[in-house]
Length: 192
Image (cartoon, rainbow, N blue to C red; front, side, top):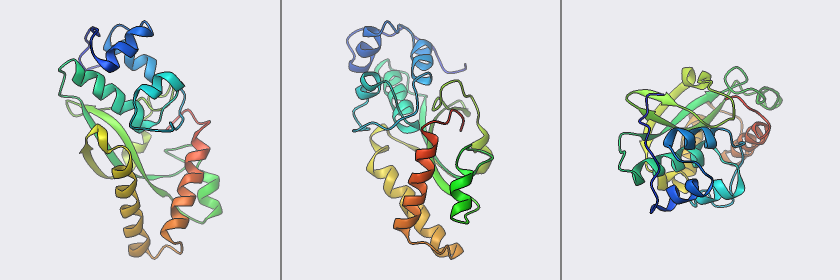
């Protein structure tokens, strides 16, 4: 790992939650979060729910780690958002859904961390795969408070542009529904 390690000190909201779980360093926090299963939270902007519910998504896991780093005055860690062409070769288990709707891929929004031009993805337990990175079409940096509604609306605007540009025979609502089917398939997936 190139990201800086540090001891988690008491007196910070997120740090205190990790200390309650006997997680004492940033690297231990990364391992802890990485090993949690993929799953959506009821309120993605309440990062403490990741530790209480024992699961998280690409957005919530990485936003939590960035918040922990900022609590300890480590500011070089960036929360990044990419739109990539998700297909069965870079995101196992979505192939049958894409085939059912005759789509070559689905434009997916994926959140991860960057530090010193290196990419870190702790979304799925035991997976360090960055296969999705080869299919990135757009990448930007976001703030932790943008993982909810902002990310969703940004993602939908990209889908709407794609539908228009490539004359995709589905409405935005249907495309979002197909995308949700793909995400549901990932709930048991370990690789992205």
